[in-house]
Length: 119
Length: 119
Image (cartoon, rainbow over all chains, first blue to last red; front, side, top):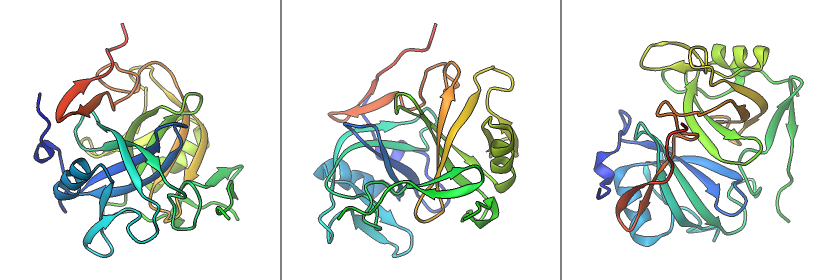
């Protein structure tokens, strides 16, 4: 069946959550949002482009930092309301310069930082 | 620092996206939603409880199916607006009886089913 970005379920703001996972290690790197047009650009260019809710604009990941995400495989979930992108991540995915945004663990009721920024 | 579920950033409906990942294989199993109380229940019981948007009620994963998710580690992202749960998943995570909800790949513009329901 041909894939149509318009056939996904977007929220009231026209957005769908998109999870980025390192295609080689399986590490979950980040979660951000897309609209149909940013997904279309991602598929066309092979470089992940999100929709920035704070800036209300397209967010070509790594455009200024160089920390681009090359799309290796796109997955859609059973409800068609969430995306999983297996990516080839250049450098850190997180704005804190860490590989993953999910560096804070909750252990015994305490927040524990599990990774350092990449030097 | 002590962790307080109330200190997370919830959306206008009081919800936060929660990604479940197989703690052993790294496979991303599903994404669903939590509110502060469902997260509190998850931490207290060690069994993942979501908030069902369609039923507007707590969704103790596997309560009827037996396909429970035991929480191994909870992670919070840098923006405090998304959760990653590394879990020990009993059986399939997906309501289609597949291990993961992300079984549809987009390849060369076509939807491709990548896994079968567990027999």
